[in-house]
Image (cartoon, rainbow, N blue to C red; front, side, top):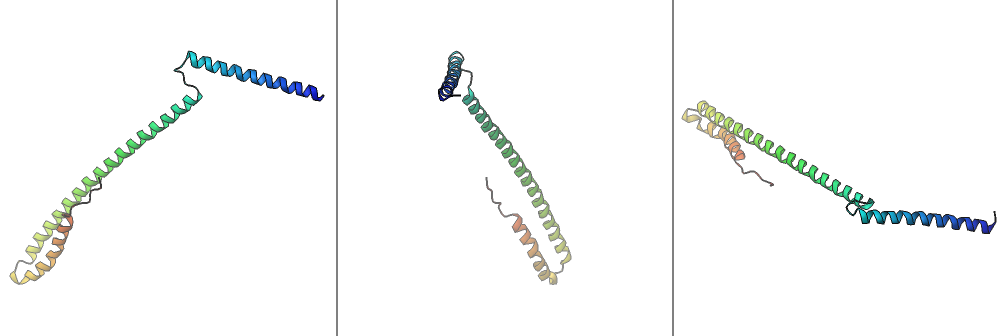
Length: 131
């Protein structure tokens, strides 16, 4: 194959490629003109990205709702535990009063009641709310 033949072949291939690309461009322009609402490749990528963002936002909402429900359930459990602990403190105070009923046992009652008083004080502390 001579140099001239090779150059002619390359020019022919180039012309064929240019003609193919020109035809594709013309078809895309015509489709865009006839169907302006139909998305092209970039439009499809943008739509997919928006879909991914919407899905992430929905998942975030579901996760947030689950966290709020878990927090509320934990708060209800903590309220119940506090209530039970205060009941225990009341029962313990009644038992101490019965155990140390005589006046000479007052110092033992006072000593043991410090635990009950500390328990009540701890349970009646305001909670830190991070809302």
